[in-house]
Length: 222
Length: 233
Image 1: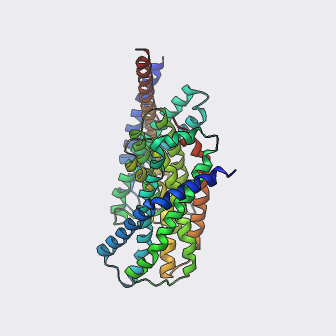
Image 2: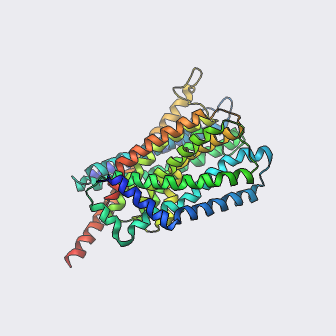
Image 3: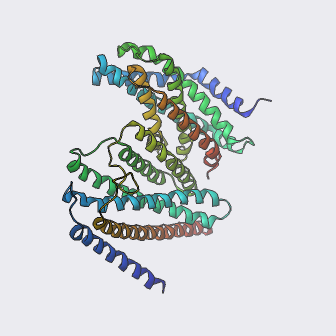
């Protein structure tokens, strides 16, 4: 007997493997954002080093909106969400499985996008590059954990696709700030990113815990 | 009796606000360094105090709603009314604070706005509670109340993190005037005016909070009666 978490996770991964909807649309969208920003700001030299941290974070943020909206919209068809509500398993496991699946999708997008980004913005990493492998997953986790939670919350409203960014962006702001400043200071090598990494870690722990605790309330809101 | 008490409270509040205005504009002396412009502190600081009163009530209401929604439906409805009243009053006073701040900043700093810890925190706070009010518009019924309560709690959690992260980042807002380091504090001739205004705006905040709460309770009762009537037909 597999645990509910594993069952949900395998199901989501299998659906994505067959359709590749989320990853493809996010990838293309993020690519568009990167191109648009480089057209708008014509990044060169030191200026490009400074803004690129922000651009990659905002590109990830915008791109993940489409996947996060889809994450629960898919469950609404054929009343799957109602079935899950009746299932005698904790909602936290369902939530965590969704977060893990979406975290994987967004991370794939970042991995594919990174070389493109380095080429378009003529970047070289002046600080410790390996720290990026810490900052980006931490920031992505903050985005995906909160995003999955608020997507489940806004799925119950009218205009659900519109509501998600409206409530997610204000809550996500401190994590975005931490992510942008940490990435920026790694790319420029000017300052020490450790403070921001710790802050991101704290944000992740607090918000993931609260999301896990409150997810049942959101799932069973009627 | 109740009506008399309420009318008396309204009269006292209005009198306090007039007295506070007189104290702030005519009695308090000019600031040694800033001259007249500093008088905005008599409105800026009290409106923040009123905003935090509203938002604290809102958070308490959100928690109360989640705690009581299964066991005491009536208490839960009251908590929800407090939550929406607090959020709306809080947003209004935050708007006042966010408007008076730049007016002063333009003269004192030469700039309207800067991304410093307190300014950013209050702006994010404003954004979070506007999104809270939007959520209440977009959804309906008891499920909206639950969802809004959850968002209210998330918003309250976010505030200290925003504050800390911005303090580490950069800061320009004046250091705390009261209870700060050596050399902080106001001249006694100014403290009186500030305290009167704090009291007046606090009383005003409580008054509109109570009015908004009553209106929300009435609306809940009308909605419940309509739902009942629809069932009976």
